[in-house]
Length: 239
Ligand SMILES: Cc1cc2nc3c(=O)[nH]c(=O)nc-3n(C[C@H](O)[C@H](O)[C@H](O)COP(=O)(O)OP(=O)(O)OC[C@H]3O[C@@H](n4cnc5c(N)ncnc54)[C@H](O)[C@@H]3O)c2cc1C
Image (cartoon, rainbow, N blue to C red):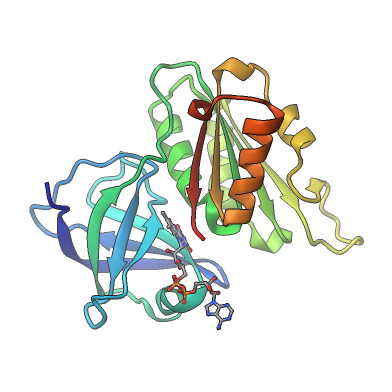
């Protein structure tokens, strides 16, 4: 089946951080495709149809009538979207695809989601769906950022933690000034830190999303150090 492509109106934009914007794309009348939490869409501007880029959905499959993507100002497409996309503009959208899917079924899994920077975007979708459906899936996000000013969706993740006792959101900051009052973790994601959050290894599924560097480091940890089979690891590499 060919992928459905639709022109969508930008309904609203939200600056999450000075360099990161969430764009809400309104489905046109009659649009109704089957998609899953964790998938990505491909977008392009009407005046540059050959320049297409993928963006993970930061909204989840229970959010109907729109897609949300959360984009960092980086490279040509990232800069154009963050600096120029505004309500009323139109973007072409190729329907969601991808296999970076949360294992909600069978129930009782523990999903350990490792992200750096904007790589946290699909995990908002995971946490939203697990919380709204009151799933018994356990979800832990381990999130690496430079400073406390770089945490995307901080309030929403904290709110979801309040609503869902099976969801935990942990941040580590890699470039904080030593005098910064942050009392949370500092430094890069390490094997020890990840292992601290694993309580039932056979029932744990690891996810890593973001730069190739972060994803490959996580793969080494899970496949080589923890010696888990590939089926217990899902990755989304952004380049
Ligand atoms: C499945 C998938 C999902 C993704 N989801 C997201 C998402 O949710 N949010 C998000 O923000 N991004 C996401 N990305 C990345 C996104 O698709 C774009 O690649 C990103 O926005 C950069 O835009 P670009 O490719 O046009 O950049 P390009 O202009 O092609 O640049 C690519 C990289 O090269 C660097 N670069 C460009 N020119 C130079 C130069 N002269 N010197 C040095 N470095 C340079 C840029 O900084 C950038 O890092 C995803 C990618 C994939 C594959």
